[in-house]
Image 1 (cartoon, rainbow, N blue to C red):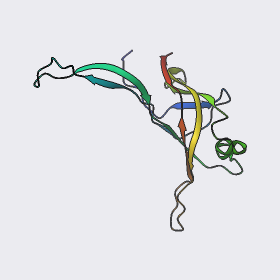
Image 2 (tube, rainbow, N blue to C red; image 1 turned 60 degrees about the horizontal axis):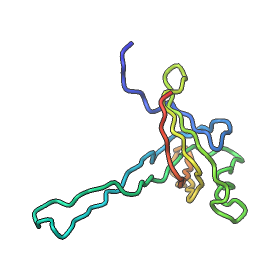
Image 3 (cartoon, helix red, strand yellow; image 1 turned 180 degrees about the horizontal axis):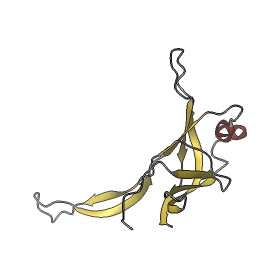
Image 4 (tube, one colour; image 1 turned 45 degrees about the vertical axis):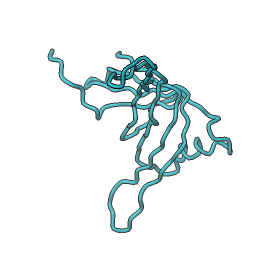
Length: 145
């Protein structure tokens, strides 16, 4: 069997261990390590600074999905009875192969919504109503299945 790159269109998202939700797009699965530059007084002006690893940073995750009648769970999660950030959830994003088996699993810890955006409404449009939610979190781990 050949080793081809995986397509990105077959995935599932589970918010807080529940049943997967049908999101159409996931973005922001990024992490980085800040570099700390250091120079001491004995280094010449032409010497490049020494670099050490610093704090880890993770970008916000954006999830997009089509709006469905009478389903405002994402808005309720954001509003959370007036105490934003109190309802933190662990999220699982799974990339699936053509046989519906997990290949890669991103585990996102302690996520909560900071922004929800409704669809752009336009009288002359015929697009699907898409809502997006932006999540902050405390880390991402990636495992191959």
